[in-house]
Length: 242
Ligand SMILES: O=C(O)c1ccccc1NCC(=O)[C@H](O)[C@H](O)COP(=O)(O)O
Image (tube, rainbow, N blue to C red):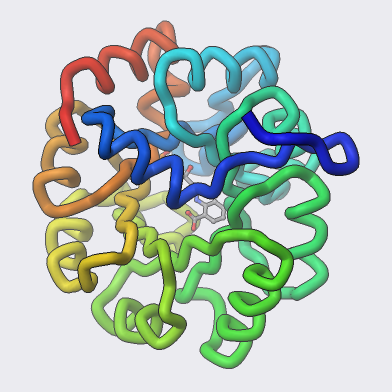
């Protein structure tokens, strides 16, 4: 799958990977690699990140995300590169991006998509960053947590909207609630890929997100805290249909 450009594998688009899994009746699950949770502490520990990434994809994750924010989440661009080089699926970079130079940096480290968090980015900057990412061939997950942010997101004509069940402004110290997806997903126009992100801790949470209309789920803590993360992913995918 894909070719090579400057040492980094060129991956499928994130929206394509999600749609493809959904069409095949496979739960589109994005497994999130977050080294540290401000709420739950160290999640990756001494594990080899490349091996972890490969095992999650082998278990059926259609894409991965990597949190690169270093101070609160223990992430780095090196981890992004390591994961992107290890797997043949799209990798989403999750960070508080605010500058156009970070678009090039994301692409150079193998990201297929970036996150734009509307809670932290004013409208003109969001539009600039969205355009820059598109011009660089990256997809954008426009992240929202409120109805007001959904209206702002729609003005960008996004292909993917991420509904964050946690309040990122509290740096994920809140417990989050899938009710946020249940409230917002029905208001997202058809044709836009909807990802329910964060605080999906149980099979029941994921079922609720899918029932509310999420086309994909992004799960971090529950996978990384499982005794066997790959077995956990494959059991979720085996038990839940999109
Ligand atoms: O989600 C964000 O907006 C975000 C931005 C920058 C750094 C970290 C961020 N959130 C952390 C995550 O991406 C979560 O790890 C991910 O949504 C999975 O959540 P969970 O399943 O609750 O661990």
